[in-house]
Image (cartoon, rainbow, N blue to C red; front, top):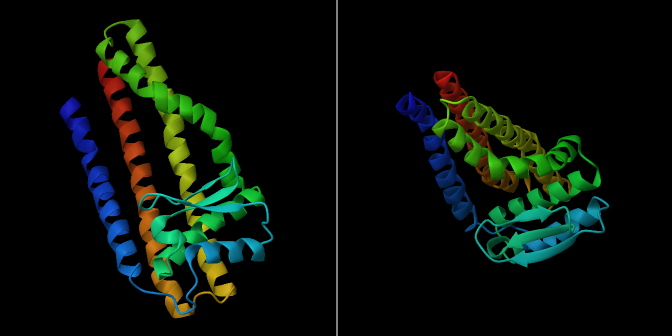
Length: 228
């Protein structure tokens, strides 16, 4: 049973490896292509925030590769070194994507608000689910062990739900990004396509994470049923 359930995860693992390769290769390819406007990622982020009426969000540079993110607690768009001061199509696409999250936050976008509300229980689930699952599997011969196993599955299901809700949040931020870049005439139609390819590759990593979580949950359910 254990071997069979591990095999269940192989497709998700392969998808994850492919997604990581795809996002890295696509970003590097279009990081070599400068935009015609010559704006940096930080300049684009500032213009898009202003054009969207979002005036209480700061822009900061952070170290690392592809460490770009929007922090809703501090209201900061943080851009990596390869995005903040660079003028490539890849940099502008990523910067606009993070601005998309800031706009979602300012508009109280439903899926984002739901995901934010889930975070406390997801944080608990990600911390406790694996220890409970391991204890439950080791002690599954007893009633106590089965209760631990079921509790671990329940907590892990919230982690899976969080991953699933993340998908529409990320897809929406990307669609907003491309639309804004064209509306503000920062990218031409021909330039927007490479930027979209970068964001589509990044989105694939979230799809892979969701698939992995779903299959992991299915594996735990199968293990629990096999020990009843």
